[in-house]
Length: 537
Ligand code: XMP
Image (tube, rainbow, N blue to C red; front, top):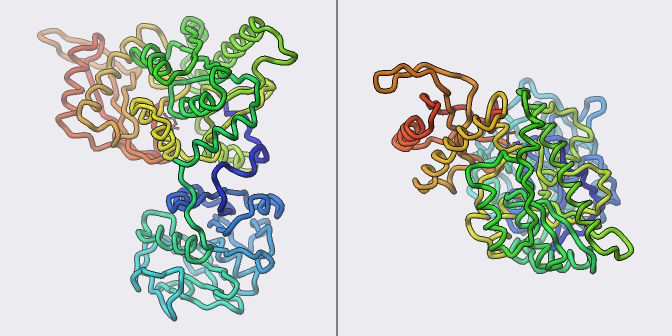
């Protein structure tokens, strides 16, 4: 089940963003990365689809425009085009890769297919009179190339400002009109000084001041929520994750006890998690209605082994439980001339907004149906309060700290909505859940005790459906295999397996086989994402 379909028009002027840069997304896998890099420079930005209208772009009064790369060729039939006529657009423009080729094409230059695709590192040589884009940078720098076409002739008014061996126009500029193009990708880590190039564009060319500070966001978010909710009530499904906790805390600051939170225990939580979450909510001063629906979920999952089927059932049951609770609270409330809870608070983040917009046009393969606790069907008819819908996860964590949330809340590892059901391969039964919980508690406890909990993005146990032969004492055993998964990542979109110290792995393995009945073998998952995913199902 996906999240609520976000309406891009719902909050056109984001909180705390006097200066906003618009990024036009032409389908590059790096578009979100450009947005992250711009935010890291202290400048707020919004990502728009390449077919955004001029009015949409103008609605945020951008101080600069960045055109992303993309997989197409500017001459291909149906290739995405620029939605605006650049010379009439009076803000600085930076085209990256496909974005630079589009600029060249629209302004009268020539783009041709290269003999072969250029992919990988290259040495950039900055040339000509010094330009603001490369101010303060060395004359030679490492950059990352990934392109099949290249600019053959520059449009009039442009000059090349840097080249590589195979791309004479690796960077170009029309300084008069403040239009810039880069054939390489400044946003990827393989261009080590790429962040500086973007910073130069933002500060020296667009004239930004760096007003985007998540810390300053809190007061404005609270004011905005107050004006949206007025004197009405709001309801929030808390999952125990950092996003819903930060969203709820912000709303609670704004409307106090007119926020009611619901915490559904679907019986698929980690060891002692429900109790710990409730204790945490209490320290946050949130008013929470706990619901133990574990029996219901376990019954609904009986006999189900297919991962997608599990996800669908959990999503459906969650909605039913939440709706029933919302109705019950409605009925219990004295009517005040309308629904008691017209607002639903969600911890939707910017990547969710971007991805669900992209999903409208892109036939991307569906890898997993993500069930997000708090994601509810459109016919709920509740108005959404989504204070985090323009933020990335690291920004949410900073806001969590600003709100005074404890580390335990702010740095919680992400936990999937369907919980242990997708870490337990095969049928979900109480007995198997108990085995997994016990093994998982050892993994999480040991990694935390080793002081690695902030470094490692996620670490957990998986109960495989495999049994293997072992020897315990003088006896043969034939028991479960537990896999340990630990990954490093910045956003969960890609991940690498964590190089946990061997002695830590040994401790985990020996404790699991000694302390968890029914397990005689522990394996360590050494695959990255891609090609694997973080969760096993
Ligand atoms: P995968 O397994 O797709 O996971 O590599 C990427 C990140 O998403 C989390 N995850 C989920 N989060 N609902 C969620 O809210 C889900 O259904 C879900 N499935 C996976 C996963 O833990 C990882 O952080």
